[in-house]
Image (cartoon, rainbow, N blue to C red; front, top):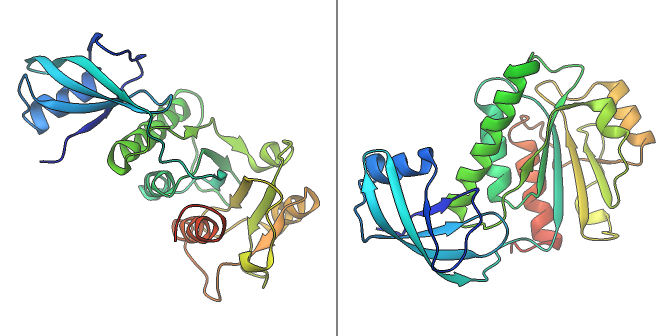
Length: 243
């Protein structure tokens, strides 16, 4: 069995002992049925990872002894920010999970004119925490040691008013411009994608006036959960760490 990788929000140090958070402990003890003495890998999102061993296992609880530190980075040389209209159902979970696997550094959920999801207050905060946990779980699986930040949701106008240094792209199926025709001024890339139905003409106009370049990723119209992943894959192939 592959050694499980577990994220903890606690600071880690060699030869220290910690109690794992409830969710991680439950996963190890109930789902994986691990016992004291078995090995795991820990990371705290600050870079690198630690070998560790389960020292005490009870139902729903797990204590570990932290071992050696490995300064391993599997991060892309690019800093990719994905700003995307909030989708219905499990589509947003899918986007967060796969974008994390593909190496994005920041994910910004957006309320746009065609967004059909209505969230606010406590429900929105709970959903944002959920998406952050999806990113954490994806890092555990894909072996990233740095967790992307899922920011609080913004309106499209709020996002476009921010100052962004780097290549700014807005997916727009009515353009013929592709990534192969573009140059990368630095390692920062911002990718703006609409929800189901896409961004409105007004939002696209605001994006273009804010310095975003229109981008198409092929002749076919892609779903909102497909389009950003296709674009990120091409970006990583052209300038990042995917061959």
